[in-house]
Length: 390
Image (cartoon, rainbow, N blue to C red; front, top):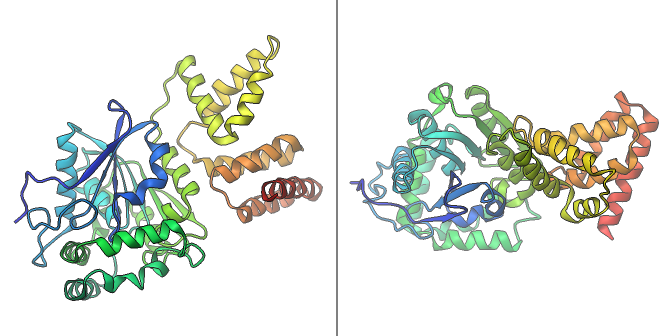
């Protein structure tokens, strides 16, 4: 029987007075799965990461999650609510990967007053046949989580990434996971089906899918995005099930934009936010060079682009930074601003676009901006790529 006073292992990062954000892990991983996103998110949030029962620092204890086959995602959601209550948080933003995403969907559907914004990464409203999850639970109870190790690299990552240090570290987390805790989480997934509750979710929702994810393919992400009113959808090219680890730039940029606090409409705050965004997108070295060249004659213009272009337009959360990069590249090609185009090709890479995606944007400009303009743009982009490679 779960104990309503028990908490999972958790870790807090970021300013104590910042807006609260809870990050939920995927099955077989620890809270370390969120390391690629942590530094950018704690700039604006007090981040709480937690471990599933039997994972990381949370014990496999029936007082936290039943081990008799009756565990549910609602039980895991209750752990999150207790963790948030312990911080005094009446509401919080939430992002979760896979099973952690299912917990977020449950919270948003059944406790809408607690979830201010939601991001669901490589997850689903239903994870396939319940019988398959029961079989997996039985297997792990009998043989331990080592029985899952051989299949996880090909599920969690594309082949080129599966031998990386980050991938090996996560597989080590899986080996260390308690069999009873892992099996209980499988039981929870077997009983989980939130498809009918998706229309009840009112929190602003972002859905992220790995385009090469064999566990929760993009069709399952689209089912969530279609079911949740107003939800946005991002498909990450070249990423499998742990897209936030394999393609951290694209996922991080999307999460930062989605969870960005509402802009404060005073000039000083806009300037500060714009300067931070400008450095993140264009690079600190470029921005410092531009500032160092400021003269009394150009000072008002530097203030204008920092405060208005970067502090108001680029920080607005309606469009993510990937989308804004696509728009910016197109406009610069159309107007023939090649120096600015080179700068924003680099920025587009920072914002999570791949070289192939940048090429696709430039190819689109050939149709709507003209072949000569696109020809020059491809030349500029190729030079940027060559410089980065050398």
